[in-house]
Image (spheres, one colour):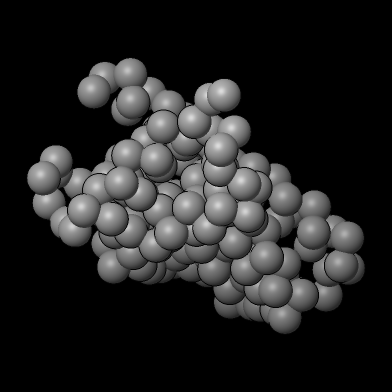
Length: 153
């Protein structure tokens, strides 16, 4: 029996969420804020001030936030730092980057749908579609970062 089959699906979900919490979320907030600010400035120059421009800038900020935080979670930090349980969670995250990537991807979908529904007149399914492709982009970037960083270790 493989080691992976000994872990239940609920435990795997908890490990994925726990590994994401170890990401560099302060740095992710800074990158997201900076990227969202640039997107807002460019949108304002191109289209003027409006809720659509604000919603687009917030979507960019959220994408960058979840990409940086999620990628940092699958990359981990320097070996030998953190508590023993943190190191075990980071090892699990490095071995399962796509499971970890699903968490920020799903959070991106949920957050983007809320932003689109609150700030635009777009229908629910249009907001859901936009959130889903942005969430898939976040998941793809985080998963690929984790997958290729594992090979280089």
